[in-house]
Length: 160
Image (cartoon, rainbow, N blue to C red):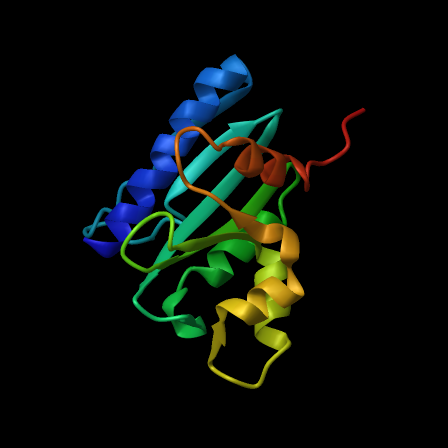
């Protein structure tokens, strides 16, 4: 149930953002196929301003630490991120019983790799993420989507 809560809240945020921004934002939730020989690089594909974003959502419940080994798709996200006009993201949600008490961070794959290399530990705390990437905090709710959209647009490739 845990990750589904984060994915549901993120999907609702994207739905609201699509309504606000009109046709410049499209998204799809990627389904997991257990019989497939290859896995998806993330949970969501978002098309925004001629850029394709792949986002993997992770949720931590009741703890303020995120274990790096929980992201098995890191290599696929990195591969996705290396292609032109494509960006890989990691959405980490620390769930503490309600949306008001919880913290959610949207990190680029490069920021996530920097997070891993910044420590010798196998996990990272919320305060360490905030210290390294203060602009990565986002809120997942229908009325506050500007932070998500502006965060996705922050790494847009300059167009000719």
